[in-house]
Image (cartoon, rainbow, N blue to C red; front, side):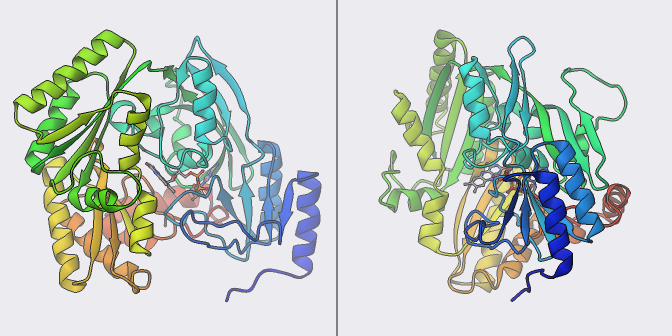
Amino acid sequence: MVELASGEGVASLRAELSAILGDGGLLERPDFETRSCDPFRHVPILSPFIARPSDAHQLSAVIEAAAAHDFCIVTHGGRTGVAGGAFTRPDSIVVSLERMNRIEEICEVDQLAVVQAGVPIQALHEAAEARGLFYPVDLGAKGSATLGGTISTNAGGNHVVRWGMTRQNLLGVEGVLADGTIVSSLNRLVKNNTGYDLKQLFTGTEGTIGIVTKAVVKLVAMPTTQSVALVAVDGMSKVLSLLNLARAMPTLSAFEVMWRDYYDLMAASNSGRRPLEPGHSYYVLVESMGNDQEADEAAFERFVHQATQQDLVVDGVVASSEKQRRDLWHVREGSEIIVREFGKIVSFDISAELGSIEQVVEEAYAALRQRFPQVRGTTFGHLGDNNIHLGIGIGEETVERTAEIEEIVFDVLARHHGAITAEHGIGTLKRQFLRKYLSEGEMAAMRRMRDAFDPDRRLNPDVML
Ligand SMILES: Cc1cc2nc3c(=O)[nH]c(=O)nc-3n(C[C@H](O)[C@H](O)[C@H](O)COP(=O)(O)OP(=O)(O)OC[C@H]3O[C@@H](n4cnc5c(N)ncnc54)[C@H](O)[C@@H]3O)c2cc1C
């Protein structure tokens, strides 16, 4: 049991924070007793306070107050991150961006939005759509995941194959550094080589270099056409040939692959996710989005026709209504079924070169089976961008033996020069592995960078390295 901070120091910190944040800016226990730092299980907040600044100036003052009382800061967005990056400790203050929740501007001419960090991705989607525009970063957690959280983790999601990760959709950032310095680098230009590209300091650095308070993101014209097919494929070489065929469509927007262990689990659940018969080795969801009804539909039909002619698919269904498109995506977004069926799981978001993905998966399961004969797994992911998810369960001991399970999979990956995290980040949960999978030089450069910006480890001290 970890002791919660209390005493005189905490009382004076409370008074300072209240004065900085004003009415409604500071939460105290029991206001946040039911909040969790993790989306899948209850991980309580150990900090005595949640500070909810309403702008970068308040945040800067909060950071200075925390430093004066020797408290660190743990930043919270939507708390959907699955790497433990939002986990707290008793000597931390949580900074939540939830009051920075305004979309300040949507510019149709320059196709950009200026958005405060606490805005959920879905709210950004809806606001952009109302102006005929589209923010391409799209993930299952979009209802709660915030723009700031997705920038700090460089979130990927379903459309990376077409529009890239968060990094590729970002123009500028405003953020606050560990010493309270406000960095306003709200670039709105596509081309701007004036000095260092400071937004990169905040992107994918998981809140260890600075806290994002606002950003300028790129928008694109709202796609007006969407075609979705789900096909069954026997063999990885055919899946990869299908990917190449799909890439020839300029409108390709998703290429999601489900292994048989995943699809059969969905098909056997009582959730209605069974558009095709189970039992094939792979199921692929292909999506195209564009703006020319006739040309886009013709291209998609041509793709389906060629795939059939080239004997790449053994079964398939093409959605013919909005409901059917949603139903097909529903098959792919079944994480709650995995949790329901397996109870506890260790989830992976690994990536490997396409040519070795099948081998990585086979070797990982073989090695896992050797140590844990009872192992169960589901395998699926954004294959179009090298990234797959494994959900691994070994029964009652799954949580206690997480590190062993991870080590087995990561060792296989290392042999194939893969990455231990493709999109979720290192957080607190994968920190122990970083040193093993990065070179000494890489580790030294990262440490030097962090020390330069945050020598006292004020921001997310237990995250990353
Ligand atoms: C069902 C589900 C589906 C998901 N699908 C995907 C997916 O397809 N692709 C993907 O990449 N991820 C996915 N995720 C993971 C998660 O949604 C992302 O990591 C997301 O970017 C986290 O955003 P958040 O606002 O919830 O951040 P949080 O979980 O609150 O925080 C995540 C990390 O970012 C830091 N942070 C948060 N806000 C800021 C800020 N303003 N400034 C600096 N640091 C900050 C936190 O300290 C923490 O280290 C999924 C999660 C779930 C539960």
